[in-house]
Length: 531
Image (cartoon, rainbow, N blue to C red; front, side, top):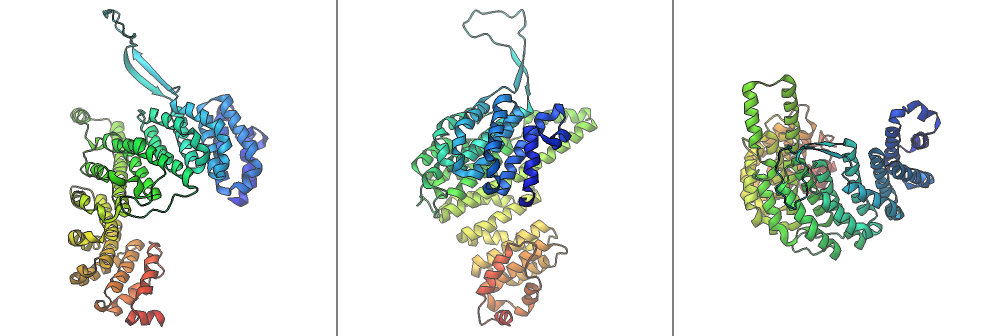
C-alpha cells in the first residue's frame, strides 16, 4: 500500500473536499454525500495501513474537514463515516488521539441515544371509544408499524464501535468520558435491532479492557492459570466488569432471542479471558458453566422454537407456497444454519478458554458439560457439530490431560473412524486428535498403536487433501516421540520426510520441528536426521 499512498491520498482528498478532476468525474449530484462519506472512511483505513509517519502531513487538515462535515450536515452517512475515521485515528495515534475526544465523543453519545431514524405509525383510536376520565396520559393508539432508516442504524452501530475503539486505543484519554459512555451503552443494550445489541456487547468488553489498560499501561499484566486469580484487574475495571458487564453478558447468553447476538457475546467473553485471564472468572466460574450447559442443551432463549411460526408453516404447507417465498425461506434457513455453526464454535471456544485459564480446578464442574458435548459427536447432530466437538475434546486433552482416562476411550473410536471418512474436516480433526492423545495420553494409547498407525495412514493417503495429510504426518511424529521403541521407523520415515515442510496446515510445522528435536538420539530416526 505504501508505494500507492501519494496517489491514493490525493484522489481521496479531492473527493473529501469536492475538488479536482477525479471528483468531477466520479461525483453525481445525488450521490455527492455518499462519495464524500466513502472517501472519509477510506482515508481512515489508508492511514491505518501506512502508519502515522506517512499520514501525519495530512492529519490535521483531513481531521478538521471530517469533523466540520459531520457537525454541519448532521446526516447519517457523514456521521457514520466520521466515527469510522476518528476510530481509525485512535488506532494510528494511540493516546495522541486524546485531544480529539472532547469534540467527537459528545457527537457520538448523541448518535447512540438518538431515535431520529425510527418512524412509528400508530393505529388511531376508535371514535366511539369511551373516555373513563382517568389521569393517564393520552394514548396514541396501538402501534401499527415501525419504519427504520438503514443509514440511521449504521450510524448508531458506528458510534458504538468508535467508543470501544477509543477505550482500547487511547484508554487514559478516554477514561474521563467512561461514566457517560457506559450510561449511554446501558440505555441501548436492549435495543430492538440485533446489530445494535451485539455492537453494544462488544463495546462493553472493550470498556473493561480500556479501564484496565488506563491503569497498567499499553498491555495487560501477564496472567497465570488458576483461580482465584493471582494477577488481578485494577479496582475500577473489576467494579465495571463484575457490577455491569458480566451480569449483562450472562443475561444475554440465556435470554437474548438472536443467535448472532449470543454468539458475539461468547466472542467478547473469550476475548476478555484471553486478554486479562482468570481475573474475569474468579468465583463466578459456576455461572459460566451454567450458561454453557444451557446453551449446549439448547435451552437458551435463542434456541427455542417459535410455536406460532411452526403453526404458520403448517398452514402454508397445506395451502402451498409461492416460489419466491420458498426461495426466501431457503435462504433464511441457510443463514440460520451459518449462525448455528458460528454459535457452537463459540460455545466450544469458551469451554476451551475457561479450561486454559482455570486449569484442573474446572474439571469437577465440567463433568456434565462434557457428557452433553459427547452428544454432539453423534446423530441427530449434523456432521459439522461432530467436527467441532472432537476439536474441543482435543484442545481439552492438551489443557486438562487428567480427563484423558475418562474421555479418551470415548473419543478415540470416533477418531479412528473419522480418519477413514474421506472427508477433509473430519479426517483432519481426527488425525490431529490421535496425535494429541498419543502425546498427552502416554500409556493409554499403547494397546491401540497399530490401529492409530493404520488410521493415520488412511488420513495420509486421502487424495488432494493437504491438511489431513499434514496432520497425519505431524501425529506420526508425536507418536514416534512418545513411543520410539514401538514404531517401525522404516514405515514412518518416508511419510515424514517426503512431505516436509508442510504446506497445508502450516502451523503443524512447529510441532514437526519440536518433535524432531525431541527424537531420542539412539533411535534410527535420529540417525536419518543427522545423516
